[in-house]
Image (cartoon, rainbow, N blue to C red):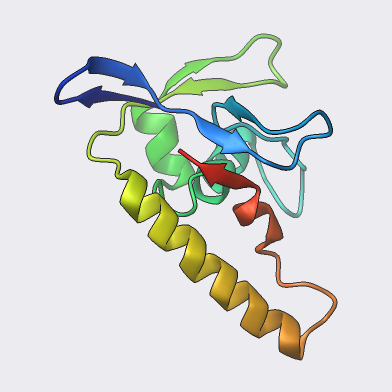
Length: 126
């Protein structure tokens, strides 16, 4: 994700992943193509990963990513997408993260097997 910052100009947006084996570090949103039935193609995987790893800041459907993203596919089963998203807010990231955590906790009370939202809390800073 790239954006244009009012003071700094063009910037790469990174998120801190707290769940890594060797301690937290900053990274661009990324993920794996799980294949059917979860993902029909890499564009659906990219869409899901963007929402998940930005705590809902970027909610962009696969069709939109295909249309506006800049794609590099080499080899063809891997994908790299660059996307410009202006107006991102660190405060909104933290607000969304807290809301997702609260919803996840409520779901887990009724369904201890999982909520499907745990991965959305992997990133803890922007």
